[in-house]
Image (cartoon, rainbow, N blue to C red):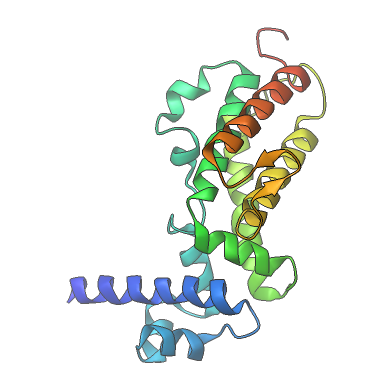
Length: 205
């Protein structure tokens, strides 16, 4: 029985991602999810509650958005001992790799640029919580030697998101092939340089 419920929950969550990726938010609802998953909508309410709760579960399941452990390279404790600029650069580079491995997420992010509603806000809140928790874990009250780190990280994450989403349809951005590993290695190298020059290291403080 528990196994049947687990399989049904996975099917429902997969349906959530498929609908958001292909249809966006304007066709998203309990009835649409039930049809896509081929389940009675009563099960969705029973297992997840309403739509906001369903979206939150989907967003935190690890298939939509990376986990903290994933962007920490699988070893958060080891990373916490690194210099500040290295920590931030490593997290951002791992985030870039993780987000590129999620084509459904990239489709959803693309929809969010043209559609904003309460459902989109639920997913945005999950992402905001992720970055807040990441900052608390790896930076905390640590003094930043130079620059406004929050603004620097915001620019870099926005750039990563934009280029990853754009790579769905476009092969190059300027001189960088954003569909190739070589192109993203160049971008990661640039991230390392920016963090080193704009954030500095813990020891430098």
